[in-house]
Length: 178
Image (cartoon, rainbow, N blue to C red; front, side, top):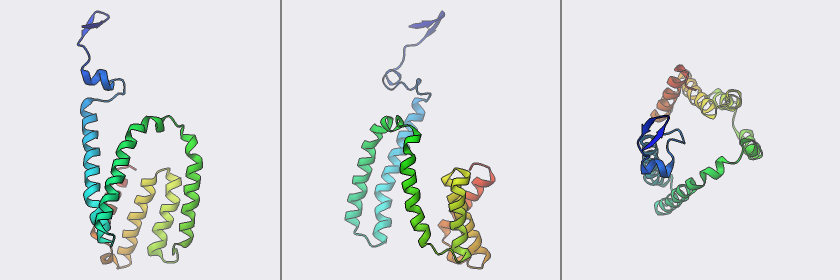
């Protein structure tokens, strides 16, 4: 047994010795849940993504193959996550500038003349940088879109899924989670 200042500690388990779970301030249970969540997400993507894209008119076999290939590549990319973590955040600034520049090209093509489309797009565009939260800006856009459509008497044109997502964002905003 290991001892520190006269206190006997049991030897480290194989998992602890191999993965250094304690040194990473996590637990085996948390890591197992995270692994299971990752697996379930990838399995969901492999079955649901092709169904959605096939419904949009793409050939189902090609979509299944592309989705499986993408999932496999992302699974392999997880092993390189420590290398990505070694890159300082400031080094990503040039890439973010390019993404922002390309996004502004899309904004130029948007129809911002109607309140039903323009107001949610404007709030999304403005609130992302002001709140420093992509999810907050997108959530405000969802909530505003549903609210404006409903207030203008066109609430039936909004899908139930969109209403549900907007409701979840509204609850999140009310609880102060965003």
